[in-house]
Length: 212
Length: 212
DNA sequence: CGTGCGATGTATCGGTCCGATACATCGCGG
DNA sequence: CCGCGATGTATCGGACCGATACATCGCACG
Image (cartoon, rainbow over the protein chains, first blue to last red):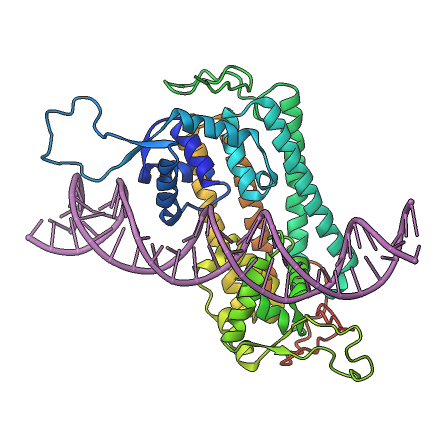
């Protein structure tokens, strides 16, 4: 999961670890608290060993003038490679069962802007099925096994069931939107925002991540 | 977390691993998919090494007659010890920060029937604070950093924010109920405090599952 | 009558990720 | 001038998961 998220983020721009963590936290704030350096740094090294990212030199332009005074030691900036982009595309394409659990789905969803519509639809439907199964499980427990459980446990199940039903409805909406070719729920209209350099998704949802 | 849940469940009755997993899945179905054996069995061994649980002999009464024909090999039944009960009480008492994350809170909540009211209140309030912080973080991102993010990421945050607001409301209700001395939302009446060591639940919510 | 399949049941292994911890630099306010 | 919070990199032990292996039991279907 972390691998996927890192490759996705580095496609927007090169970053060093600390920055990566902040961006990750901002992008995935809805589904995870904050990723730990204890997983981030090892993963970065793993991705580098696999050739999917490389260290890029800090201070790219106009570096001469203040060379070593405030020497900026540390600060390892990572950059995605062509193989890394391929890897990311491959990870998107093969949506396994782990793509539908809470974290996996959230991370994939966060990068839907880089995912083609067919895959988006497939993932949304897979997620819906999974949540529906969880919902049925909870209904079973609340129905058949209710008297075996105490009031607090029941209340927990009820709250969980409610969350499931709500998420299914949310997914239905998203699926309907996908099918009708629109971007997610909100009107959103213009898209003429200050969308500088890197990203510029064409009017409807489609993203077309550029392949060499 | 697993340690806590196992000690909690074994207080209701002795069980073997497979059964433990099923009960765990039923009780925690709202918050976790299913406990993996890859964590369950090692944890059981750890708890046993610490002296908090022991292996209990299978086939307690009337065992003579069918001794080895269908020999029932395997089936290690675990039973909580006095030290285990102490340990569980201690784990309830010291509600650390990990008690307020999604999983930790869910597991603690599932055993609220074995938790005193003051601690229940403390945990509910701790959880509320944590969710409120997450909510503020999401509002920040949706407010200040909105134009940096694509429509899908924003939709994810919105959905997360919605879930936060809903959970805060849920917690408020539960807290109000606790303060007024009632059990969770549903009428439920009783809460007669038959606080006996092992278990001897008075009429209303308590569990009592019997073994064959 | 057998046979195969799904439920019951115990167990290990490799891998991912977290939480705590350590350490170093920088800018700013008291 | 000194401390403190933000920035920044890094490791270690431990918790938990997913895949896998293996053995038994009952029963449904051919």
